[in-house]
Image (tube, rainbow, N blue to C red; front, side):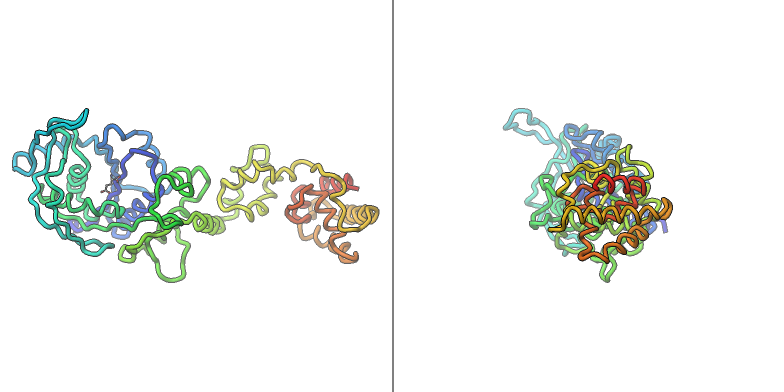
Length: 439
Ligand code: GLU
């Protein structure tokens, strides 16, 4: 039946870079609406004229688009001033609000504001996450609901808009729990039904302090897009922050979250924002992608001059070493991939293995060349190269006598992938030429 339809909303204020913790509130509202075949509303709460900026709104719109958290409706509070004014007038006419003369104590303070006539009663409300809460509103006094008829404030607009939009469930951060009693008083004054509340646990940093914008391990949400995290991984990570799915499964994509999310299993205590866990989850999500998609992404994150056949061959090596696409770019910037494109420079002593004489090393390298030459280009694969070189190495006193100089001749580095992998990536000609040079 239409009147039973679930309506949720996420209502960010565009007053700064969107905080990554906000993703969880958005997600839970989205999931709850979807699993109940309801409506999910995104509402930009830009009533604070001084601090609200359109660029911040654009930022979260871009973010939700990327995360694929599709909303059914979008509203901007500033477009709704006339509706808010209608309610202010009605509340004043009916004695629920009044124009209050103030004595300014500071520069810029108003001589008149609109205050709510507090009935001074106890408000008790249920919460899907927290225990039942009772607040004696007497302590709140006649609080301000609008600076003037053109500037309604948050507590008022949030209640009017939730009512007008038919919001049935208010799912939001626990920092809003103390606001709820005020908002219920306003609901009662305008004859709005009380929505069901769910106040989500605080998100804590690794030191178990409340997550703040100053935490260095926590970036504004949009930065995670720029760093090349997968949207599903970020959603998965945020979903597990406060929600305990029970069971073994940890990796969820968005449709699975819609299916499995259970608001009654959201915990009261704060979840921990652990960047290493995010990286781990992201890697798990990467592994689930089709091969072509992994290749396409890795190539796209490489510098242009590496987006070629060699780049393609590097994919497995790169994949092993990254948690997110942005790591590809970093590897390239650190020069870790240069060895696949340019013969390395190094001093010849580096080719020596333990106290094996240089002449012996030279001989081994020559042997390697003559055997590798027998492989044709199209058979120049990791397996074949490995077979060929191991046959030689196994006959030596120690395998390192061959494998060390070969690896060094190919990479020029103390640490690198194994020589077979490098050889297969750079190809037969380049491999032989580097070995020759080493000799
Ligand atoms: N606009 C409020 C905020 O950004 C949220 C209000 C609410 O969810 O009730 O914190």
